[in-house]
Length: 265
Image 1 (cartoon, rainbow, N blue to C red):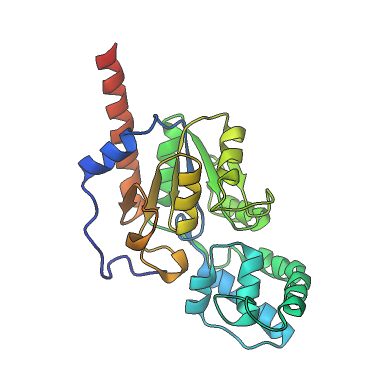
Image 2: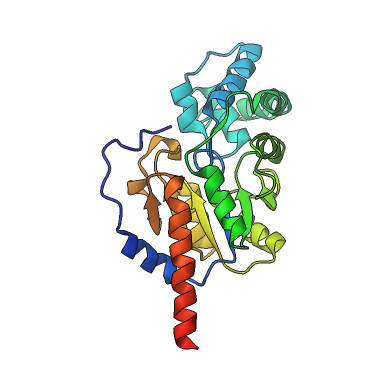
């Protein structure tokens, strides 16, 4: 995880945040990313990667490296780990053979990670309260992640979040993953909702939200391939230090929309 207190620009004011979110239709649902947004999962991901690399006889990688490799789905993570670099096999003379080896390793990696995915994974500050706040307001709650569905479902159950989460979209639910907007659109379809907010921690979340024409709220301190969220392009609509700020922001925006509706009536 990135230190959320390191070298930050000031966050936008609450007034500006409400104005930006209020410029879009009132949300009927909130879509949450998982890794780096709701949970810190690097310890278990790193453990699974280490087991796989040991079985393949490949050099080991550090926890810090894995933290920068997370975010583009399990297949890309395995490729990066096997290559020992963020670019994966791109540009390597034997890329075709390496891709075939990574494809062959995927069933084993999935099995390893499924076994350990709740050993050390913990919720981030404000995660449970944010999910509960959305659900109490009668809005739909979905997790839209590039992590495979099976470990995502196991984590949701292990953390006791099943009463709040109606829909789970994983990196293997559809043929495409974030930053493609298709997973967000599928979440909306399953929730029977038209308008939503996307809450995440990375360029994948902002890009998907922008393509899906919905506001994006980004949490500092997540993964985002080790880069500060202040440098995202396109920029998120709102940046918060932790999800602990999210329930109040959501309530304030909903209350503001309600007052506006009463005034129009």
